[in-house]
Length: 346
Image (cartoon, one colour):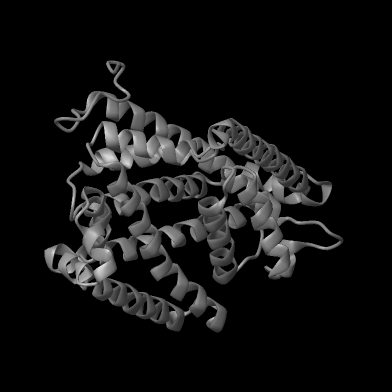
């Protein structure tokens, strides 16, 4: 009885924490915008008027590429165990990416709802799917971060080291997964006495699919390559934005800013709006991104680039989400799935 009475209290507490976090995120966004609009940054902001069509299209294209690449990563990882049209996964990712600005895990809820109701993917398999993507992401970003910390500059050696170390990391991960994937893997797990009963449950098969996803050398390798491309697309946005604003940042600076911007967006529990901008501006000051980009007397010209990147991304994400909703409305759903986003569901 006491547990039942405490459930409403816990729910109210979680909602309160999410609301408070979102309010703080909005305050952080407002702070980032105020910093970007300071008088000291007026010269950089005036450069926006002289931006070429090519520069604007480049940052728009890189923002769109992130949505598409992440969608393809989701598709390629689940492909060994469950067939979903690539266009459907990319559309779902576009919708979820836009909803990621909001708190309450709305983005996650949207992904799960669409893939369960429309594509017939069991909830536990979706959990294994997300876990596989997270593990593969760490297998790539971990070596990339280590190489960047050691080499400092983006050179030919940096490229060789990142690609080589990521390939080894993903290869080791695939090898470990292949010990436990498929029926042979289930028997190997069941050979551990305390786990035998677990392997006989229906829920175990749905969770075990995660091993089957990672065990695919092709899927894991493609996902790894695309993850590197995604991080570089984030870095490219900052390079282009800095070029438009006349800020002298290096490729290494752009990689740092893009990586921080990306990781905060992934990890923020209150939605990525505001937390990424404030965190990236703070990281630029903490790690000493180009003195000219940081400015003197507390000014932070790099804030203008961060806010510019966010503004362009928001417009692109909104457009992609709109196309995603439209596509899921007109495309046929998987047989057995219920209608989602087509206006015909109960």
